[in-house]
Amino acid sequence: MTEPAAVARLALELTSGLKTAELEDFYRDLHRHPELSFEEHRTAARLAGRLRTAGYAVTEGVAGTGVVGVLANGDGPVVWLRGDLDALPVQEATGLEYASTVDGVMHACGHDLHVTWLAGAAEALAAARECWSGTLVAVGQPAEESGGGAAAMVADGAHERFPRPDVVFGQHVAPGLAGFYPHTPGLTMSASDDIDVVVHGVGGHGSRPEATVDPLVTAAYIVTRLQTVVSREVAAKDSAVLTVGTFHAGTKRNIIPAEARLALNLRSQNSVVRERILTAVRRIVEGECAAAGCPVPPGITVRAGYPNTVNDPALDTEIAAVHRELFGAYTVFDFGPAMGSEDFSLLAPEGVPYDYWYVTSTPADVWEAAPGEELAEKVAAVPGNHSPLFAPDLSVLVPGVRTLVSAALSRLRA
Image (cartoon, rainbow, N blue to C red):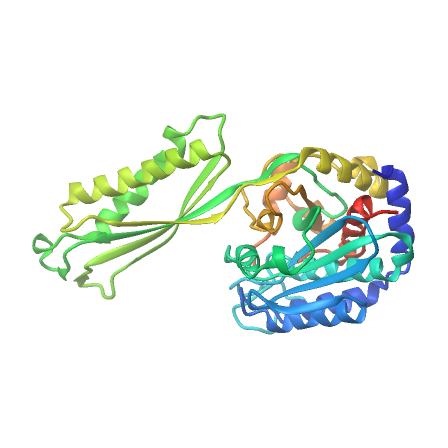
């Protein structure tokens, strides 16, 4: 293991020639042309082109739209760097000159930054092959937002078709005054499950409710009762979030529908809490439907989405030390586990360590204008990921390349 200070010095040397204007142009182009999960054809082609020009052996079409670039550079460890490609079904409201040109689609989570960082890091490391040995694998992952991209790449043979990693690195843009690099050893992101509920009633005319079993009213009781699960069935020391994201029922004011549909999302940080909440959801849904006299039992479907993201503690401590050397000791801190979720960890085969950190990106003027005194208050007050107003400061482009380059150099053989 190379000393953090030496890794940081080498990373700065290797990235001293980064062309900021060119990175900005690439980023703006990606931002203008967002693509939804498993539809990232243009984005994938842009990344693949840059990797190919830099000397990587590039495979496109992995899991449909995924990209894998391999640069074999002698004996040494295999390091995977991951960036996700997809955007969100969000109508952009930033007013930026380079705002999305695709109606109803936006890079509201910052994956355009991730692709830019990955391309920049891959190019910088390729240009300095004489400084390291080993194998570098750049992974452009599709469909992080839908939860299926990493699993699809693994199912398409990512661990067999390409050099098996000794370590996997990833990062995510986040709200917070630009210039900080939060690291959390151990659990850093929560597991996520999607739950679909169908309440079966008996439809009829709105003037004769007595001849029906109204699934809308029953579903409303379910929504209300579900609000007690976390507050009354989960210990205060444990963290969990249960959200009802959609409620669909009915077609017309004077028609009582025959069914109502709910879509729930559960975030949890350990398996015991997860199972407790899932059991409570089933009990509440089935109980309310029985109390209402629904003609058939409800449909309850649990779709596992993302696992917990658990950084290797020793690896995270090592990379955090490198980033402190790069950017200053005050810039790296532990913000604790987040309730957000990721499928990044699935790219690491069992037993392979991985590390996942954050790059804060809120422009200074936006941060200063936000209400609140405490860090958490300010973070909650500025536009964050998935907001139609999310607009990262472009000053984070070069640092985000350097975080990846330095992480890779910490493991590649000098």
